[in-house]
Length: 249
Image (tube, rainbow, N blue to C red; front, side, top):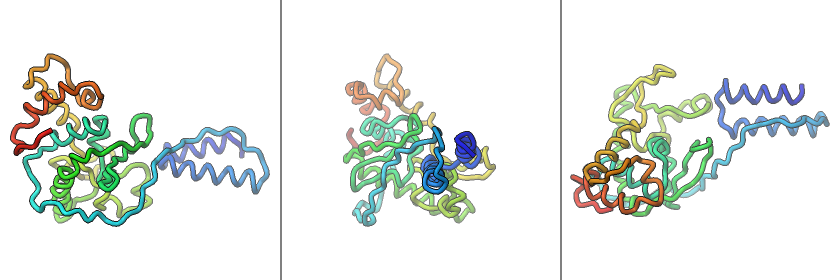
């Protein structure tokens, strides 16, 4: 076999087996080693996926001392809007966040499979740490109730479900902003809790901009850019901040 067959095999891993880019690169590296060191042959040029997944630092479990009664008035659209503005996240990057992507020790957010199918690390605003921890307490309460009803599993990317069948029920893989209700996964037919629909945030920001009297088109992408500081202040002091128990932006 030569470069064409190796390329076909790597394509099979990505298209049919749905493996991650790192797994494909591992297979590619093994084949390069075999051809070069064992067979002493030049394999030739082969295109393979590359991954820039950032390393996950090891640390002790978070021992933060937060309040035991989270403020239910902090609605997800408000929290997500502030997260978009403070971290520069895109809309789908925000709604697809998982628990393990938030690092409260280093104040970072790991964006996985973002634009261009690349991973990156962005900042986590310290002003949102307490709010996010309180929000995650509510989410964890929902996650602990779902297994009692026969649910509790979440969709896993790539071929992770085959590698680790128990990962779909682990807390670290749950969505930071889960949907209010269960739904049927059209790919597998499994009933599970998906992430919140992106339209929820889009409609909330659009309504807030109208209530603030901004005569322009405002979207979640607007908050992720560094320019709309004045507009963002006007939005958050109107509709998005209603019934927020005095929480200031």
